[in-house]
Length: 144
Image (cartoon, rainbow, N blue to C red):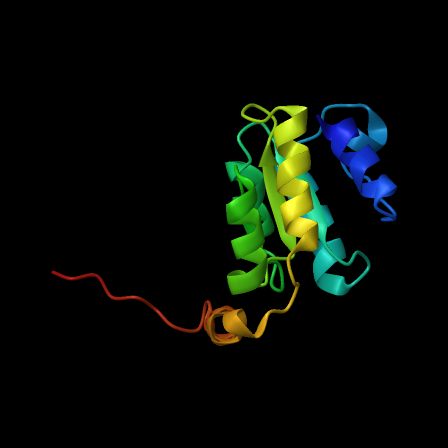
């Protein structure tokens, strides 16, 4: 699965920077890989990311802890395109467990062909940025 996606990205003219087991051929902790790859996206060292783990959930949660990363777990092409349009997602998270190579290619195509900074998503993305800025400075109170 991973190599098929890498091949598709390279076919479309992207330079792929590998992290974790895709780089070393040794199993790596997904949370640490998400952190390293997420930092590369957030810093601009990588324009965007396609991250994998068994379900896709863990790697998307970990990646979203990095300020500036907007990772979207997508299991279908429509969600991938809409995550790009409405959420300005810069990381596509995929499940190694659920996808076929063909479905992964479809999702990737929808992701790459959707506009990156569609104005329809601007207000929501600005709100997300404000939440990131205030995270940790505001305490939530529990109802008693």
